[in-house]
Image (cartoon, rainbow, N blue to C red; front, side):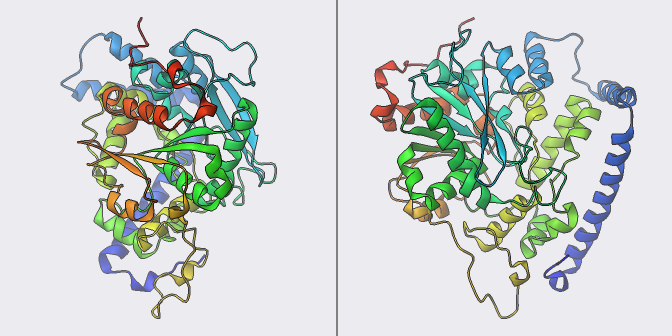
Amino acid sequence: MVVPLIGRLKGHEYAALVGGFFFLVFETAISFIIMLLPIPIIQWFHNHSRTLFHRFSVNHANGKSEAEDVADAIRMAKDFGELCQYWGYTHEEHVVLTKDGYLLGLHRLPAKRGQRKRSPGTSTGKPVVYLHHGLLMNSEVWVCLTNAERCLPFVLVEQGFDVWMGNNRGNKYSKKSVHHDPNSVKFWNYSLDDFAWHDIPDSIQYILDITKSSTLSYVGFSQGTAQAFAALSIHPQLNAKVNVFIALAPAMSPRGLAAPLVDGLMKASPTLVYLFFGRRAILSSATTWQAILYPPIFTSVIDTSLRFLFNWHSHNISYLQKIAAYAHLYSLASVKSVVHWFQIMREGAFQMYDDDVSAFGSPGGRAYRPARFPTKNIVTPIVLLYGDKDSLVDIQMMLKELPDHTTVTRLDGYEHLDILWGKDIDKDVIPEVVNALKVYCDDSCGSPDKFKDGFKVFER
């Protein structure tokens, strides 16, 4: 295994490296032990963590409110289908085969609340919208909200759209390939490049084939925006198939992490991530810890991690929304895709994966420059919505790399995840998305008159 720059690390970076290594050894050992435990024992740990929490929590009240019941129901939903069913929607499941052999799960909401499409897998004649999640996520993040009016896919369905949600290779709904076993290193040998070359364009083409539409609208969150930036930049023909690209919490070249030690260490040598996590899936034990820890404790762990790594305080996300959504936050992703992000952060450029890891930090400098995604070539209209408290968004750098037809909306006081789950997204975010769809949706989407005005579509 190649570990570049190991000789150039500072003393405190060595300490962080050694400490991180022993922590991961401990965490791996505990996870392996837990994996061998029978379910009753795991449930025992869960129950006792709950007892300890209630013993030391001064805010615990007896009995549950209706809002707490909703949050618990969302939290305990096993998959995308159960989340939709809870709110009265019937979904469709589709599978697209990429050109390099991965099978990706697609989820579709073709009909309004309480309605069912008579012929699944066929055109609805409605304008088509495609939503794509961020890093370490899956399509459940769009529908795990505690209010239907704050759930973007549900609002779009009620507004008259045919809504589709994609999934990256390797995650909960796309862990299969016709060429590689998911337990093999080869299965996980992918980065942002592969999302851009295959996952995004192949998913879009599948959706257009099913819906018989000539174009669709793309809404991405975080890495889901980066994948679209990359795909549209290297596939000129794809621009003719996307009538508008709406980027929520857009990611292109983040400055880095808020934790200086971790940020410096990973930028000094991005491939150290391979030393920590191997070359398969990253943080694969997260779901195990989630099963053991009582939800409020697990929520506190996630909040602490986000505050340490990104300086996010999540004040705009309610406590019950966190309880509900954090259970659906994590999904498997490749270590290589995370390494790719640290390469991008280190170079300060939205570039393709650099396979020559030994070139990092070479004393004589680089003999070449990794290929960059030519984002200025994007023809599709671009609408950016970003939070001014989001540490991962460098809006000025981004605008320098995007075409002049890009428009920007700043969301005051918003952090990264706030744009997905914030308490006021039905007022601040969703109207902006729907208005952009109305402006840029062309004739193939149908008449704008069919879209409803306002968002009071969830009367009980």
